[in-house]
Length: 291
Ligand SMILES: [Zn+2]
Image 1 (tube, rainbow, N blue to C red):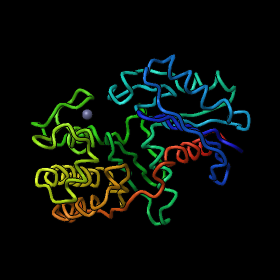
Image 2: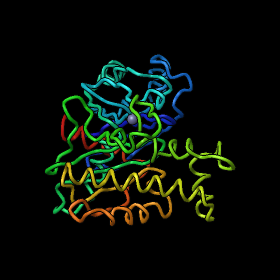
Image 3: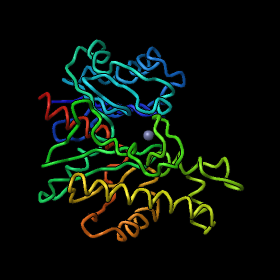
């Protein structure tokens, strides 16, 4: 059984043919269209998958946003250039004639990471810290997506009621503080206007404000992890994303988590899959829900 897996993100669209053993046998990637209207996204997806889908028997989509009954709804429309509603599964079914499923990209990544866990781990949470903050929850060995597709959107839990406004409409979300965009937005003086990558480079050289911004992100994430432990009793939290995997970030999170009461502490590890987690997780979801 060959699955056509797709990963829809704010900067790129990826597609791959994935076999039953979860090996990627072909892969393509294009930039997310600058004009993010439904028509532009549909045209880009058609270009992306046309060389691949004739070899597939089913499709699976991992996408940013909330995925409910195969429809994409954006929780933070700025992550997809204002695109707020898109019938993913219907569009791909019409295009390919294949059966398919869709789920949130961080939920898919959680599933892919969970495949790597020792069997004793039954409850796990995956958190991605990148442009935004997302997550996926595994409970009793199964991915929980929720009746509305919202489970795991931990970036939109409250970190600071006096914090900055988040793109989702709430004030003081974890994402507004800990994410790359949140770090960059809080930069002042000589760091104003720099992106998170540049701010991390300054922090590595000991720049005082840059270190403080990175520490603020790591502290916020550690508190989120303690909350998630209280909510889900997770045995392991896996951290991914460009910020989450940045040099020195995980040890900082670990040291803040160590300051919490022991009941709220849990094992931390770095994500293994990186760039292909969404594709592989989506293919796994299709294997479990379609095949
Ligand atoms: Zn939010």
